[in-house]
Length: 109
Image (cartoon, rainbow, N blue to C red; front, top):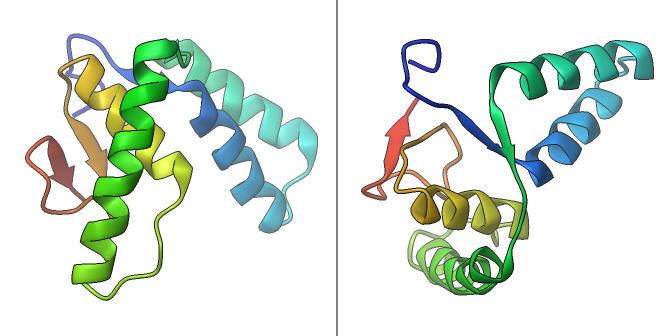
């Protein structure tokens, strides 16, 4: 889906989240850097501006309420930033994250 998309976006915070995941899995920093460079080369990396910052706060409250209703653990601010970025760019979000599943802009994997 990403390769066929007109444009693919990656919120900059996702780079840190991916790096953290790989460090926990024991990858060395050279490999992590290579993988992050691949993401950076294949997508447009977006940053948090004022509007996305405000929308991230709103999205966090929305996701926290959803998590409570669905008896999930509290979502991360990373999840809210990704959701807010998706909405700001009127994009689709491809994820398997349980906190985001079922939202109209989400494509579940």
